[in-house]
Image (cartoon, rainbow, N blue to C red; front, side, top):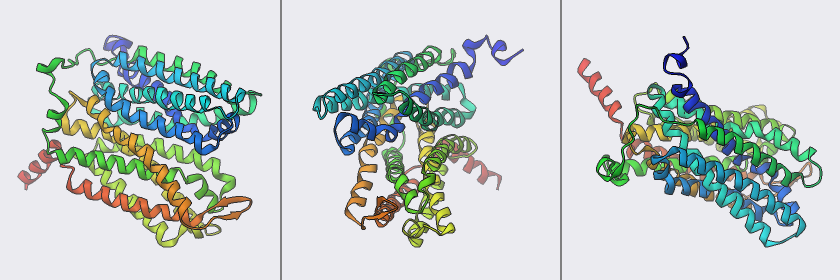
Length: 448
């Protein structure tokens, strides 16, 4: 007899009620990271600069974090309502983005189209992103109590892998849909993602045996839950999460040009796909590995130590500036890119389980939502600061018809290594060991 049948059929199967719907939701909303594939096409179609349209992506990430922070309690109380909100907002935001791209094509240079894209892709889709990201996470941890990291890593890996899966499809659609391909693509994908997310919404359910605390008498406030540990503990988690995202975005936003600097322009597309695989692999691998550790914070220590080491080596060797034609430096720069992608993804997947280890499962969706506000602010600072550094340092040169600034990209690493060092200090000083880690340490002492 199968596990599903022995436990009462598909309605009580953790894969059907948690893992599959989580993947359907996250593989849809994760396509927000495909923005770079069509941002130039949107800019050309509506008659604005690429820089002007780039703010749509920044707004999407900002409202992802802020909607997660402010709607965390809605997710906590009713995952069916929150997953439906996510489905409607994401799909309608994508469809409206297509409409305003179409309008911009008919009225070149119209601010109505630009502002409409900001509102559609940035605000409306952003709400769908935040609620869609949160909705399956607690449910997964409840169904997979013994392997919480593996479960959340699987879902969040779907968010990271979405770019690798959708990129070739989006490129094919842009090449084969004829006139107006860019807005037609948005309309088609809006329908596809609505179906995927709606099925995920219908399937998603918490275990029947889980009693969700309700009301003031039964459910403590978020502040009182956070105060069960020194408040510096939560501040440390929030800031190191923010730093990891900021550093990841700073490097990832310059990744394409860095690859060209080291003489691999012809392989840029392949390297981008491999980076996305490392991003997804880091989300699954680091979180599953953390299940075997006494303290999940150890994962962050490893991420920050290795990030500092690889970044420092590229700085010392000036790998980005001197990499072209030097196999060892090319390998070193690619190692940095791939590891930062993996650590960036691993930071996301470990946050909800680290928070649950510290503060319990009762209010985890709301606490995780507040923590995702770090993502919102990092979305406004990571790539923007990197662009500022590149535009105001170094020297622009033309190489094989491509304008690039090797020293500027190299200088971004000074910014990231300093932040990684701060994050490591916070990891070691502010974030306290979990109760599980303290109990294991006490037991070890007792044996001795």
